[in-house]
Length: 385
Image 1 (cartoon, rainbow, N blue to C red):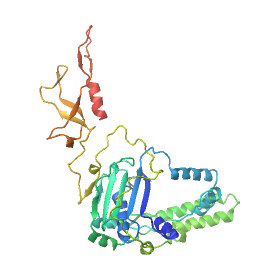
Image 2: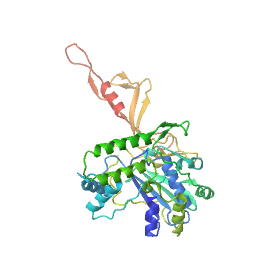
Image 3: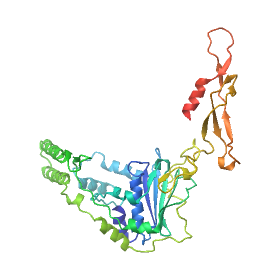
Image 4: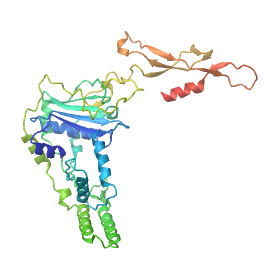
């Protein structure tokens, strides 16, 4: 809906649409959101928009332009009261004159999960923080990388061939009913909690409490009426918006060439300056081969499986019977892989074995204690890795 509003206002679609979010696996970084984007690229196959880039920020990222703007919002609203969203935006616009601010309500909610039978299922998306879905040669492709600052992308994977793009482009997810009530998951027609009644009762109590102060009675009454209309789903601001078919028609009407030239890179190699906020995303972790990080059900799985043996990987092995540390038999060994297994001939893997330190034998007898394997230190190292 936001893309539709901005594109129609500017009279054009971008070639690339960047979606920025924190590392929100439940809200954004999931199969359903990727299905929505795949569907969008299918229905807009004859427009300039050919690439959608997901940028996921790690915990602790430095503040970017959006964070700075929300900081200004907090300052503008500090110490001020408002009853409705219109009151809220009036305060914001009045106090932040350096920005052109517009408001829009969420009016529709479509059931994107119905696309599942036509889409691949993605696994282990939490491992990556840059995802690029793009259209090339009539098909829909995907590639990813571990961090925004990583230099290596995975190899592009074909998600939908051209013949399947036409099928997905014809789909229109149904509009979900809007309600604050809670229904039984096994019986959608059975209401388990009448939230609408509870919320209206709360508004009535709020009205009685506010009535004790006679000032601004007219403004409060209007605000409470607005709140009741929102709860009962009859407020036009929150219920009337463009239907999905109208959005698709408007975006497709913007026209343009919908496919990049074959000489163009299949994904951007650089991010906007405001996106490069993680200077040291994993200083203590070696980068993983990008191809091994994500699994796509029914299309492609990492090879080799599990494929996570790379330089820096810690390995724990059962030790041969004659392996000893300081005269004591070792039940296991702990090592660090030094070179990529693919660079070593045959089935060999170059490993640096970690030898635990020694500590005096626990003994109550006086005199010098014999040195033995520091089992406590060894267990701590195992727990750490």
